Amino acid sequence: MTSSNSTNPTFKEAFATLKANAQKLEDQTEPDIDHLLEVVEQSTAAYKVCKARIDAVEKALLLTFESASGT
Image 1 (tube, rainbow, N blue to C red):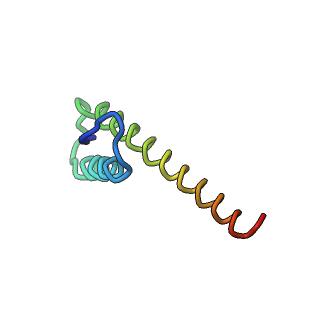
Image 2: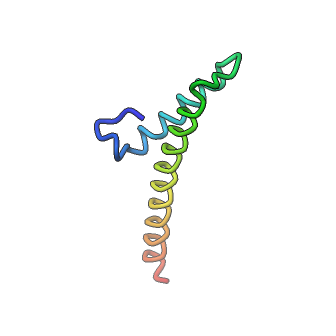
Image 3: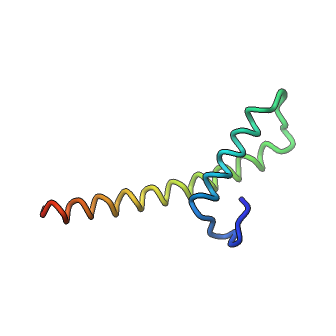
């Protein structure tokens, strides 16, 4: 993942990494075994960033809606 702060990429950066790696894998006519582990590791890290951010936003929305409805 390319980021100005590589230890803490944004959702947008992580999602771009996932999209780029998926496209790279789809475009291959033959598997590139030499780089597969690197792609999988990058994708796994990017997925974790995206999932954590989505979970945090979902939780915040649920709390907001619960407060608004008075429950």
